[in-house]
Length: 302
Length: 282
Picture (spheres, rainbow over the protein chains, first blue to last red):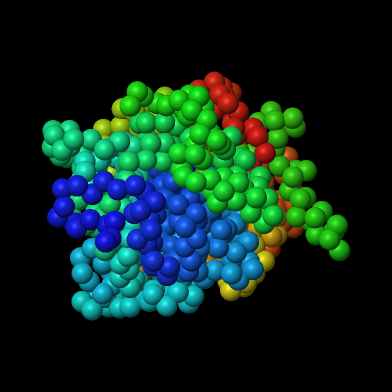
């Protein structure tokens, strides 16, 4: 029996570990959030804890800790990403950089709007999407999913990007009802087009709320339950990233990660102590963050 | 040999303006250079990965040079009155910045605005820039096995579709200013024209710790527009890996920050002094 619920179900609330267990090795997995914000870190931990392999990751511009962890932990064969870094903390994500320089992962080299175009095509059931992104650039020479084509009407050049349908997208939201109608706390990132394009969606949420709470303000619902397969209540599920309007990021933990990620020995120790040797996300939070620190980061009362 | 390389790569450091030598940092000067070019009633955007000089320029322009600016970034839109309270934190996206925003939108909409040419001013940078103002944030060395893997192309090829875009480089050396970039991740006007694009896109202006550059309209090459206070044009030539053409007459000196600009920057835009810190490479 799958932990993933039927899209029409009214109750898709399942533990995160069970939802992640349904992801097979080799699947194309899109991860939501941007920069230090709304990264579904708990899901990344669980993918590593369950030792998923050969994933084809899809990340957005400014992807950060989740992607670097997954790549460093050996879960990833290829990644579609336009930037993977930690902003001023470190422009280039260290495990990503090493994996590419050592030839251990394949990069589907893209400009950010190529990601949007690939997802927009999928969302609309089209084989490809034209865009201006990357004209005159070198993306098409290294990425077979990008071509320069002629506008069939007027003959000018445009870039064509092949559609991409992720098998599953994992997003973090502030609130969700049990059916997966979910509301972000702030920025929407590329989560909306990502969910529209994906075959399945796993919603991580700070709190599962009543159907009535969501229906009071349906305009704020940007992740719609119709392709959501699991709703996982994961308080502080973005830690150390920021959940907008819930808690801010923890720069000390980012710096700790970046120190460890400079070499593979310290990185492996970081991953085994914080992830592989902890039984659950809750244990990780308790042991490595601590509730006082988490409470101190709260932006508002939940 | 390694020592020689280091000395060539770091020569710019000994010449670039610093608070100690000039009373202002290169990053503060670059913010002023861009702020002065932002005209009233325009729409301006900032990138996400690195934004301190861009945000400072916008914050400064909003306080000193414009009445009416519309600010957009990957998820929010804000008007001039809010820009006047913008201060640098070192990060582009924070919940703080969302407060009092009239709208929050999907990131891909921001790219739609860029591609339609709706954004008047935008910002970007790179690990390498060449004579055509092509920039590279993807890979130095071969793409397959780079000697330096960059963070990726981000949205910078889309940025070139803003009417005008400001490129700032924190290092002015021959490893940054190269004849041809190793990977074009954002195409300059020449490469875009050659590709026969549906839209021509925008025009870049460049600022570095040593000088400013603009695009020569006929050749679409970068040309030297000004050198910063105390910088010899010959130093710029030596640290630029491509031909800057004949220097006819005096090269103008970049107007240093005015007392008003500097006071506004330090008291209001950047009270934490982020622009006076060492800026990261690229």
